[in-house]
Each structure stands twice: as structure tokens, then as C-alpha cells.
Length: 365
Image (cartoon, rainbow, N blue to C red; front, side, top):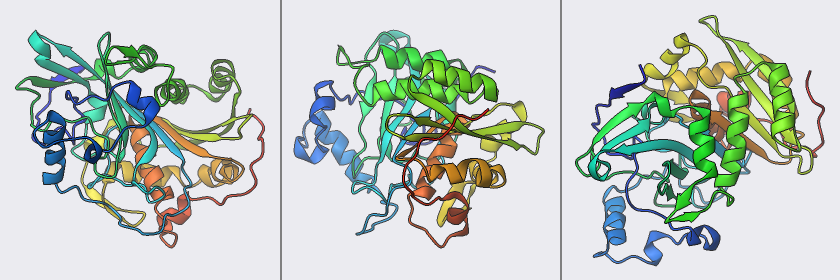
């Protein structure tokens, strides 16, 4: 079923819907100002700021001391959200995770009355992690929303509909070319910005995210050919309870010795229940974590993780997390736990790794 009407009960913060508060291309080079720096209450910018203040944005952890980051950047594509309130990064002063959350949207009808959104990005009722986001349009301006200390990066409508329009989930916007093509040709305020970061990096890592669905031999060859300077240096396969196999991969860039953990997304119909069954539970010292995604990550950080992935992370310079669909949701919880500083928690100890001198690792065969 590729498209069905979403029952929209919550404001767009939880659904990942686009609105018209855009960031122009110049701000990407000059670093976007906080809303407090250049807004008046009677302007559209000021009105949006007041809405944020009225929401009384809740910080997850008010910590004076930053914890060392284990995960340095996160890149997700069409990913469900995972936690209430939005995960904050305990390793950064503004609470934001570096990187980019990408999702796709098409607008149809007069004045874009009908909104079709990648169904994966609005599949749960939770808010997304605190990270800059881009709502990717085709052949029209996309919407980029930087994460700040008062905004978790969601490009969201302040009402349950967008200007009175209809909002649909569309699984047809969930595919690789929907993301790579839009990230390549992205425009903000009429200016092409696809060669600027974080969009250029997101396009490159989208290629890596979709390679996780292939076999080990295919993934190794396609990463080496399609991502110049990167090698597949680790892969762990986990047998799922429903007869499926889930892969966690590790790639490394030869020049920088940076690495990226890649979580595979949903690869079987039975695995859809991972996100369909949703209620809050405890994980890594947090409350109200999506139970299905929590259980999946707990399973993926045992067994082969301990032998095939975790020891190799110690030889990485910096660590990124990449994932499409369920894989992106796993990245949200993974990064939040890794950067939480909850050192005594058993879930943290199961997942986390030590930092050693970075070294080049061999390809896996």
C-alpha cells in the first residue's frame, strides 16, 4: 500500500511536515543566526519564534559539562522518530547532533494544497532527534531548518494541517533516487546548494545507506567503486526472530580514518512490526523510547557486534551513523545513547567503545 491518508492529530513537529519558514542559501555559508538575533514579534519570523517559546521547549538534559562524543555526525533518510521528548546531544553546547535528517515531500493541487510525505518519516507519533533537517522537494525550493538550542530542527507546521491542506503518507517517496536526486539538485531560495554541506555529504552517505541492503560482496565492491577513498571494514549479520537477517556495517575513509556505522533498514514485511508496535520504554538511562526500535537496537548491539564491529570502532578517528528508514531510527537511539554520558547504564556499556589511536583497517571479505 503506497499511499494512505494520515490521521494527523499532532502538530507537524511530530510528523516531519514542511512549512514556509525557509533558510536562504547565504546562511549556509555565514552560519544561521539564532531566531533571537534577528527577529521581531510582528514579523513572520517573530511569530514563529513566539510559537517556539509558547511550546516551552523541553531540554532533555541540562548539563554544565559536555561529555566526549562517540558519535560525531548523523545522517538519516526517511526515518521514523524515536523518543519523547526529542533526543538532545549531551556532547554539544546547543544540544544538537551534527549532520542532517532528510525526508521527501511532494505538493500537488492549487497552491500546493495536497502534501505527500515520505511515509517512513511520519510513521510514529514521537518527535525526531535534535538535528538540522531538510524537507526535499523536486524542481522547487526545498526547506532547510537548522537545529539550535531552542529548535530541534524540525521544519514543521504549527497546525495539524498545512494551510488547510491535506497530508498523505506516500511510500513511493521512500526510495534511493528520491533522495540522491533531490539532494544533488537541491535549491534554497532559487540558489543551487547541492555542492555545499551538509547536503553534499548527505548525498554521498545516502549511497552508503542503501548499500546496506546488499550482500557483503556487493556492498564491498559498490562502496569501493561508488565512494572514492572509502572501504568496507566491518559487517555483522544478525538473525532476526522472524527469519530475516539484519546487517550492521562499518566503512572507513582511508585519508581521514573516519568511520561510519550503517544500520540496515526494514528488509522484510515481518520487520514492519518493529515500528508499528509503539509505546515508550526505558533504554540507556532514557524513558519513553520507542519500544520496537529500542528492542531492535538492543539485539543489534549484542553477539556479532561485540566481535565484528565494536572493537573496530576503537580504531576510528571520528564516527558517523548512517541509516535509511528503520536504519535511521536506529541511528537516532544509537547516537543518543553513545553521547549520553550514562556510563554506568548496562545498555550504554553494551553499545559503547573506547577511543584508541586511529588506524587504517583492512577490507572485509
